[in-house]
Amino acid sequence: MADDVIQAVVAHPGLVLGLPAGRTPVPFYRELVRAHREHRLNLARVTTFNLDEFIGVPASDPRSYHAFMDRQLFGHVNCTPRKINFLDGMADDTDRECRRYERAIARAGGIDIMILGLGTNGHIGFNEPGGFLIAATHRTRLTPATRRANAALFDFRMADVPREALSIGIATILGARRIVLLATGAAKARCVERTLTGPVTPALPASFLQLHQNTEVWLDRAAARRLLRRAPLSRRAGLP
Ligand code: GLP
Image 1 (cartoon, rainbow, N blue to C red):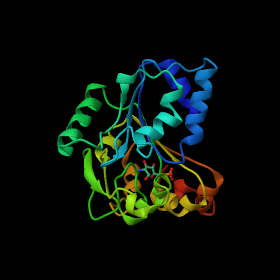
Image 2: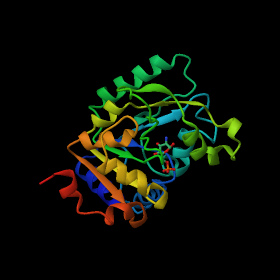
Image 3: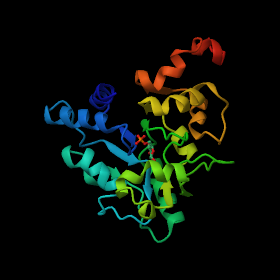
Image 4: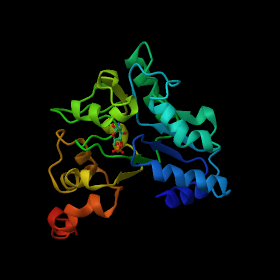
């Protein structure tokens, strides 16, 4: 995936990327950093939008997604600071902050490549499973499963794990020109299978990616193992 993004940036130096936090993209970020060090990747004109941020955790706090991204990527490459975009989890008026983010994405011309991780409960960004989804960037309550999945950042002190977050919305994700879902490890296998072969439902937000014409799913063998056991996907999904 890193090679793919590197080529895309060479072809379009002003590319707009949507970026996730989480463990899955860490090797991807490591490859981008390596390519930059080897003078194969110039990110000066690239614009980035991170997908989500905890409410009540300032950017300067090492437990924020902002700080995570600085450690994994931005601290080691030549992105232009004003072209790096985050939701501010400390904003007084979160509705306004969400509207600001939507406007910033629109002003940047929309997202060219939206890279996503996959929550084990099927969330993308912090669009959590439930009875409905919210189209635009919004404030959201985190499910217990998601809080547990993020506990490592907070030294496994559950009381410290935020209960709310800001997240780009499902329509914001589906508005990207190209979507790339990354999933690795056996813990994601069931969710990957449901995402690709199950119904489109807010009970599994990632299933909405089935509605996008230009979505790719990049898996390792462990995450793909339930798919590999099945009949060819194309036949099941009724695709040509
Ligand atoms: C987190 C984040 C997502 C991330 C996902 C998967 O809670 N909100 O942006 O993609 O869950 O995380 P991981 O890659 O660590 O499995």
